[in-house]
Length: 173
Image (cartoon, rainbow, N blue to C red):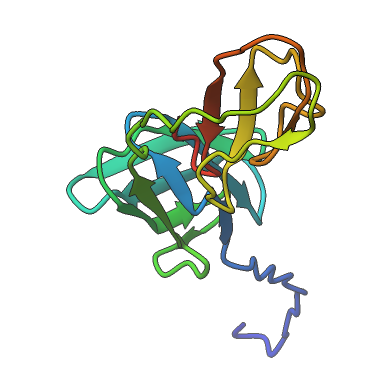
């Protein structure tokens, strides 16, 4: 001041890190099904984010718990990109790990397999179509050593017609 006095006062500066996100989703999904994209945040709640599905922008606001579950039903292979994420203090317009792609698959067509001839109470291997990423369910379960294999063993005293339910890792039946 004009009397030659100097006053000093400490100032605290807080530097907040930019919020970021982490996304998880299945790699593939059968057409017509829905799935979840899990979004986790760094920083302090409440969070908000903007994302794009390749055709449109969407906004999600006032998220107070995590992970946030985003339910989607893509009609075709779709990349979901989070373009901005905000927390209580800051907005990040260039988040990392901000994309997931969900590949859409189609079910394989059903077929009728050829009949298998055997005699009563003789171990006979049955064979479904072999798709390594599929699970199998044979119905009815009677006469089979297992009903969850592509190649169960049949051993029974009566003729049985089976239906095989095949489900891909993407959920296609």
